[in-house]
Image 1 (cartoon, rainbow over the protein chains, first blue to last red):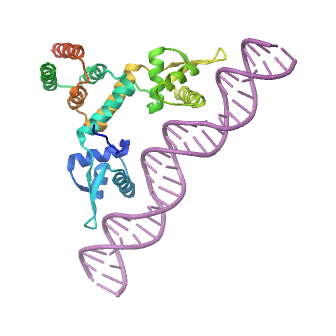
Image 2 (image 1 turned 60 degrees about the vertical axis):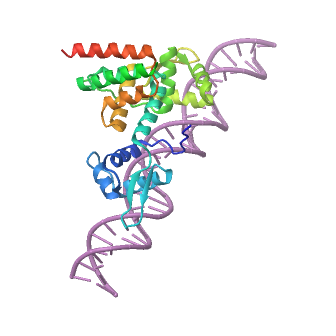
Image 3 (image 1 turned 30 degrees about the horizontal axis):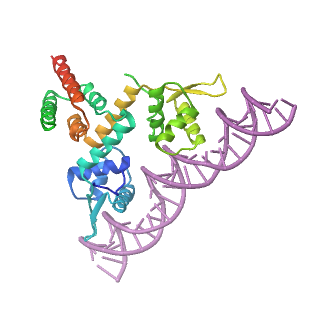
Length: 129
Length: 129
DNA sequence: TTGCATTTACGAAAAGTTTCGTATATCATT
DNA sequence: AATGATATACGAAACTTTTCGTAAATGCAA
């Protein structure tokens, strides 16, 4: 099966991955500017984190030019699934139901989103035989 | 609103909380035995973690007897919601839909669970007016 | 009561994560 | 070529989390 050596991203690394997923290949400066919209982070801090992410295989980079361009090297969906499965295990004792109930429970989802979920369930049920 | 000073549990603390939630008030020895069903952990390691959890307010304890009895001091549902909201923010850009899709996507839920989710959605839709 | 097993307390090492200072390289402008 | 702005590289400090060794207390059994 798909065995993945790349380690689980830390919180800071996940923040950076989100930016890379959303904006595509980016310079350190750009990522740092985006981060600073939420909280203050020094430039070299961001740089160091991105270098570490490169070493870990979480990001790849193009060093042809002076300003290196970084890009996510893990897929958004796969990473989401992995983190979610871990949380399901660590906090919900493996119950997808309880997790979904919590996720939907507090008006987090709009009517349109609920419709989409219903459609998804119908699809799952028909696939299931 | 409900402001909570108690800090977010770490991974190890969460493992212990799960045991306390499942089995109720427990001795350090019992918790350590449960932990060791999954992975090897030294007794004093577990003890130290539980002492820290007490200091943080994540657990309370009864020290009347020689063997102290620990109990969770945070609610399972609230903790789940908190962690889930954080993950939704950190990895799903706040989209409950994307999160639920991932959660249900890979056969994680049984037919019965899907039925329950459908019922929940119906309830949410009717509440919504 | 003496000794053994079990418990808590404490401190610190080990490991992992985040932050940043400083040195050095590169490029554009004068 | 010299200057200034901006980039990467590197190492280490600061912080957090996990692990465990050791000492001291407690209870039990011989």
